[in-house]
Length: 348
View 1 (cartoon, rainbow, N blue to C red):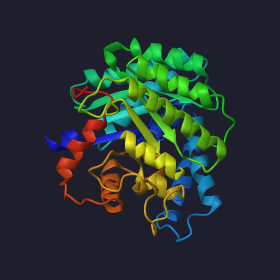
View 2: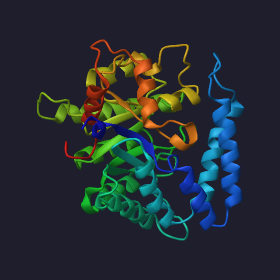
View 3: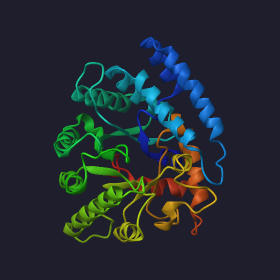
View 4: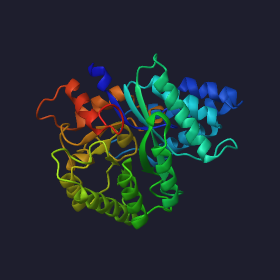
């Protein structure tokens, strides 16, 4: 029973394929040399990042992670890869409830809509296959360096019309250092549009220490505060099952206080945070200055297991290591607590 409650709520499709799937797909596309290059680089990266130096990893090591992502993008070439890859992630995850997020795009001569269809097909197959015995849902990711409000409107329509309700929300992501096409009032509009359409939304936040990131964080938090103020008074936190903020590393004190006062859930991916130098292990985890106890509005995720080597079981252990547990909440209860933050499933 308790094992069924183990959730992975921050899982990117392209960073979570199994090695077996990547090898098989590389063979299919006659690009095994790229897979072998990936395998060699991955082994080097995992060995070199096993122990974090006190001052953090070198820029050279940080760059290796992005090179690994680039190699995966070369292996995944058509919509069938998206369908089969979605099933692969579900089967190989240690979680029983998973929300997989992916950025739709044109691939293999097929349209963006064909990509979404393929993603939905994988999720629907998981739902039908009684051997898998997992609850798996999808989020459509808006890339803030590519997409605009019109794209968000289209993604919302796709979620609303999703067969078998396998799509349950949006994700806002994208290179935080890149030039933004979705920012400020337009970003705030996307948040409001999603929530007004009863669509849940995960928002990558505080990933870089820049003025534009701080401005966009303010825009998002203000939009969320306005939405909350319009809701009828209720005992339950209205953001549970509706909104999650991803990472929240570089924030002002005022932003941290607003997140805490609104009761906004924050996604923590411990290994990713360590390997990107967002969390130096000799210091307190940055998110602990918002919520410092596992009983708070904290959400555990793997982010990109095949890159960072972050299976969900080890992420739960790391999570328990970096945050307090004043009430001595047992692991079984922690898994049940994590279920409150899901966007899909029987609880919503």
